Length: 249
Length: 184
Image (cartoon, rainbow over all chains, first blue to last red; front, top):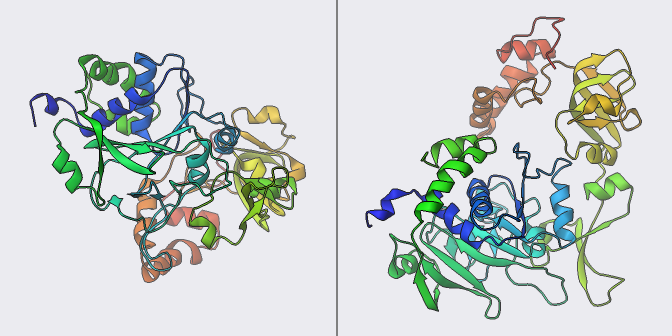
């Protein structure tokens, strides 16, 4: 760990990495319990994506459309093919890009029952790009095969799919989804981690990109903007997160 | 699903889902060919028509018009259900219209079958700006619901042994003096 690496925390790093992936002019949906993607999207809007249309479920911040008529608004928007970017997580994420939000263990006698999924199995298909985020990078998260496929990475023949998995952002790395070979490729390793560290904490053999790089450190501008403008906006949307996870500049 | 129920449709189609294990456990979701695009597989869903739906409103009138907190899918859910009961913080003595439900959801009388005056009826959950979530009570509920035995004693303590809402609230430590107007 270098000195620089200690100047930010895990949530800030992940939000900054997500912000770099957001493109200008995109229509972006942020679902329930997603403070990191919300922070990343707003940061991108401040830095390079000022025309992005950001929608945050149940947001009180007037600027970000909150789907006031219900979450069905978001679902139908995605089904029409109008959602460019969405964020999902998974308690397990497997080699084939499947995500699990349902159960750990056997479905009939689970070790852990998770909240399940509301629209994830549709949104994973219909958003043009889905960025997965997970606040731990461990072998219990990245497994060979998920215990339950909530939303599949692969698409059966003869089914319409607008998009699908694009990236996974974790505290250690960015994995990119290769549509051709239908598998994750290690694209970037964050400061503080290493190739060996990422491989050892991934529960399946991980292909490494020929152009693998070290994730660039958060810049002063990114950190400052995140801790000022973005933090202020987040206070009305995710007050606890803004207070506790994003430092004040 | 609920959408199809609210529209009185025999089924509705949904995008995505193919390849998800959800389909293995949900007989009300089936795979079918899109009749308008031969060869394409889509998921079709059976409509959901609950027998009864219960909503807690900020205010309602004696005809059944009601305003529930926030904007959302309440009207869709009310229309899907065969019977709709509204419990309410306050009963209005004049007829409510959609104008009384700005930033709230208006449930028109035609979609409501019964109204019950029930102040603090959303407890331990929140009700708009009226009151917020009772965190301590929810924690107790969550703790109790981990096991059959402890959950039974929770029910006994708060629900079964209380003969009405006032008693329930007393047990839950919520002070409501009878006849007190709720703040809206």
